[in-house]
Length: 147
Image (cartoon, helix red, strand yellow):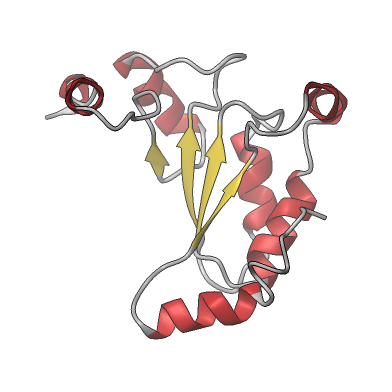
């Protein structure tokens, strides 16, 4: 099972329920980058812990999941299938998982993925930094995707 800091978050389901009562959707960040090199190497051979992560997401009522591109679980179809038992739809953000190593996708790649990869939102820029140039760079990354 995913590790949860129960001191900071004693009851995830209750927290998600309280947010929903205020009209806020709660998401969970999966396939993250902060694990040690040894853990990542071990997970890479098995494709990560998708089923356990999806189970935690569903059991606690999360409605959004961000699947980061720097962890070991890069098969968005596996994530999609694992999230299907949810009684409510779960929005999937594909954060560059279609590459062996994270890099911004080309517009052609995004269009190709959209037809065969079950996600709802696709990230097209790098992590944002707290400065004007980073913000503008990430905004400019959207230009090729405008109609």
